[in-house]
Length: 216
Ligand SMILES: [Zn+2]
Image (cartoon, rainbow, N blue to C red; front, side, top):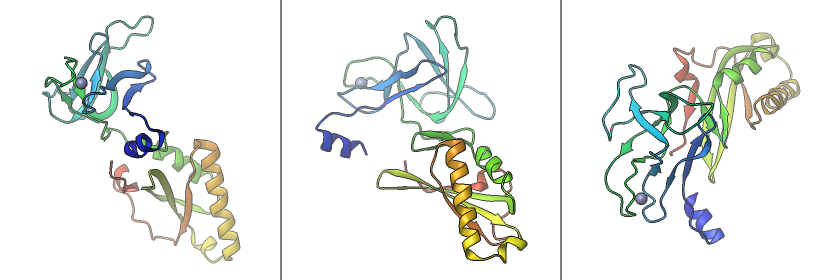
């Protein structure tokens, strides 16, 4: 996506990172010279990488959850705030001359939040939309993919026996209604596919409900 933006707009695109709890964008940013990792402004933020389950602080280079303590932030300081973002820290000298530690592009989350076209989506939000719909079962699967640099979300929902025997037109209406409810509640477009009764594997933990085919 970066290469395409740079080519089409004839500019140098750099990655910027931030989170609204800290200050929004600008917590770290790539340098133009290297574009290899985002320099964290350590004069304002102390970064740490921890093991998401044990909380143990991990050494440089190891992948874990990014934690920030703010040094200069007033009124709303944060102490060891867990971002839930998974990345690594790299203290090696950079060709740009900056000595600020670099974080890798965020590779995932330590909770089950998905980012779909820039929108934060928790599977539980989709679940609550499904639960409000008559005739469908609380069994679902989310399939995330990326086509032409755009994320796509498909929601497979199981319907009950009674509904399954209904006419096709009615089922299509139901698909459209769930899709509309998801859009209105979460602000994200999703393709809804109704599935036969008992066709979706019963989930053993949250992760099984999400299939993320994106290669980031
Ligand atoms: Zn640099």
